[in-house]
Image (cartoon, rainbow over all chains, first blue to last red; front, side, top):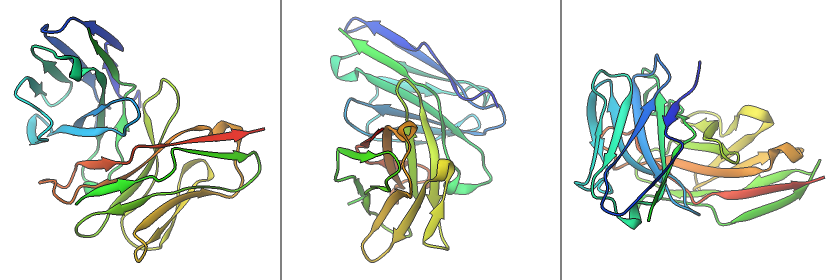
Amino acid sequence: DTGVSQNPRHKITKRGQNVTFRCDPISEHNRLYWYRQTLGQGPEFLTYFQNEAQLEKSRLLSDRFSAERPKGSFSTLEIQRTEQGDSAMYLCASSLVPGGSGSPLHFGNGTRLTVT
Amino acid sequence: AQSVAQPEDQVNVAEGNPLTVKCTYSVSGNPYLFWYVQYPNRGLQFLLKYITGDNLVKGSYGFEAEFNKSQTSFHLKKPSALVSDSALYFCAVRDGRSQAGTALIFGKGTTLSVSS
């Protein structure tokens, strides 16, 4: 179990630029989640995949955000035309099904995005 | 409304004393409840969960939590605190509105500080 890996750890970008983050889940985990965490708040759900299928998206996920998991392994989260309000820690997590909705999430260390 | 409340931003205890970190929730349907811990510059780590069964659940590092349906609470406890328990603790509940029942709603977090 090598854990959930996220790259890069930090990203500083100028407003209006596009950014892409990568997440490598625990290898045998078939569910992958993206959350966003701002300072002083708990993580907020963005989207989740089961294998390569994106099965749920939060209303927080505006059309500037897109996530993919093309082969059911790693995932990318892209933010287009970044805004200062996008500055946050982006967390990836994975879990194993079966285990249902009670399966614990394994989180990566996150990617901290700063939009200037 | 689906929500999780952690009424204390910070809890201070002396090493060796018992600790309690409070959590109350509001959710439709049967609650799936979780506690996660976040150490500085690290991802969230799963501590314990309540799905069904015994109201007292035991988890990692000597932590336990008590589910109280009438008070809609799920307080985290430990009989004897360690300095190494100092961290940020998050309570979470499965979002009953989530289509696939996978999204979690997190509280804002409680910082636990254990003094030697």
